[in-house]
Length: 102
Length: 185
Image (tube, rainbow over all chains, first blue to last red; front, side):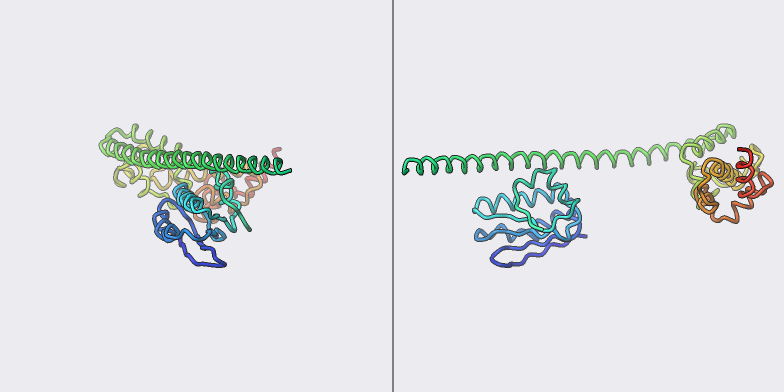
């Protein structure tokens, strides 16, 4: 079961990922996060507090968000990574690209 | 002073470019890593599906072969081999019907086979005997297991059945059997 929501806080887009972002859920995630690519004016905070699993197709979506924000000189921050999810990000080499906060 | 400042600014600009270049390289490597991970996931999934299909096909072929098998000795050998390999009798719900389905033969064929070929006379008694042997082994080799755990591990639905079967088989209760082993040592 996966759910994605978008909101805005303090001039940032906040994307909240909930549940398992596996290969099946990745198309739903891509659809839910699509509005981010229409914006060029702000940074993005990805709230992973309730994210339990992420597959490589999920990581690819986040990488595309990173590339989009970078091309517009904005930042992407990951928030609330669990140990398991953090390990996936570390192994994928993502921790050098994204900022993180607890 | 001005020259120093200019030099520092140039150095700073160079380092910023270098950081950006390294980030580009990192993105390229991360993308490549994802490509390989996705390909690996596809390969693993394909391998899993192939294995499932192969098992289904092999099971089907085996059941077809067994259904046509008239030789009682061969069928008995196949049963012993399958039970030894997969140990399905350790599941409490494994019964004559499940054994017949596993082999692809009718229950009537199994009943007839056991009447002729074994001292147990019925498949049920044969399965019970295997469970009893397993329980005796666990009583010997696992002194820390409770009787309830041994009943579960050996495939009995309850402790009472285990006690009855062991009493019938060796003339003593599971606890008495354990005490006897302790005394011997």
